[in-house]
Image (cartoon, rainbow, N blue to C red; front, side):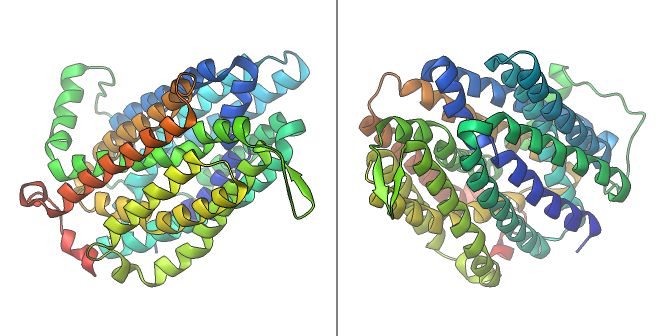
Length: 414
């Protein structure tokens, strides 16, 4: 396995850990400061910031190379996550200080995500890519599991300090990347002019991507499931926090925020441990209708999380959804990557990242929507979105017209 892959996979573990110290609780934090309606709008602006970063990344990565952009994104995130909380703690304890800080951080996150994906495509073949994405998914969830448990314990009194810890880790990652990371783009065109905001230039660049019907179908299917998965740290966290009645579990009195921490931890631990099984049997579980069944189970699990308030039912629903997620998320990424030509990997990854960002925007919009609809109706809205995703995935993988531009999709069958 290429050295860059090993380095960035390990870094991704620490990135996910540091981010999960505070990100699952942002909606609760801003809802507490400004209310649910404003909190939803705030979460949307984070996504728009990330989309801008995606756009700039796609325009620059195939010209300026992968390393420079990754270093820039990591260092700026690290510095921002240190300076913002410091100002908040020492000078001005206002929510807008954290908001401005996180706008910068999400912009840099938008830059790094497509670059990282393009780098993987640079140095892997299709078979190796399956293993890389599954291993990456496993380590990501290990970091999430640890981070969300610690973050949940810190939230009430030390939320801003958790952001500071994240800043230190990102700064270290950026410095180590400078020393050990190798450029993977074979021809870095340093002197080529970049038209970041030229409509004609960008439309021409992305038009080929938009014509790849299978890529677009799987991308929009993935968007639906990303939207639903994101609800655990968006709408669902507020819903559970507001509607869950304090209960005693094993001698501990649990409130809504504590339950959210339990659900986040359950999800990430199951996915982290179960990914090892997925990794071992990867060639078998991606066959036939197994994926469609997994998508349906995933959908029903999240519907139950949105509809019920009982601690036992919530834990069972999270268990079911997490088992399905083991298959669903890596499979969607691999299916998608097999439709991307290497010579345009950054452009494809940029388009995909920007469309995925729509899922986060819609996730945030559900927070605002919940101000007008009760949680039972919101549960059916989430189920409808999931069913749309299943239909799109079915069309993409069974319709001949949709699959005629697929790149070696049979490799998924092992």
